[in-house]
Image 1 (cartoon, helix red, strand yellow):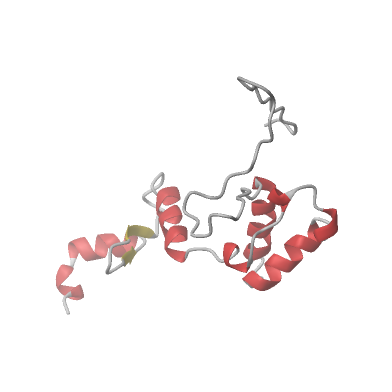
Image 2: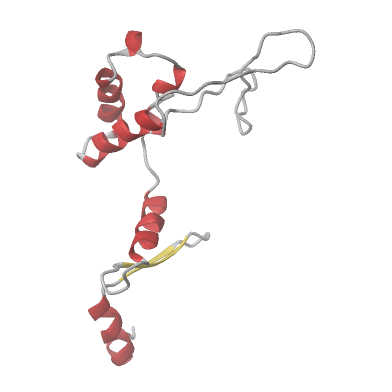
Length: 139
């Protein structure tokens, strides 16, 4: 990835102002949408991985970038604390995808996100034990 990007606007007629559109899923059509930068997301992820709460991670993420007055653009700032909170089901799906490459070491075997969510967690030994001795697991 290159650290700089060049954007060129080509107008068919006379030059005019380019307005930032609202997010397509937004209920408030007057709010402009700025996508959060990848770097900002990485900073927040690192803070959350250190065990920090979403509220603390949000404020420390702002401070780590020099504070609100030092941010280069709107993409460097999270919109609110809700954006920091991660979806645990999404995290389980990601773990399942990562473990798919090595079934012997996998622990998250299946994730279903239907109206009745279900997650199957088992290492290789548990799976083999279940296949060989299903009567031990009957309820």
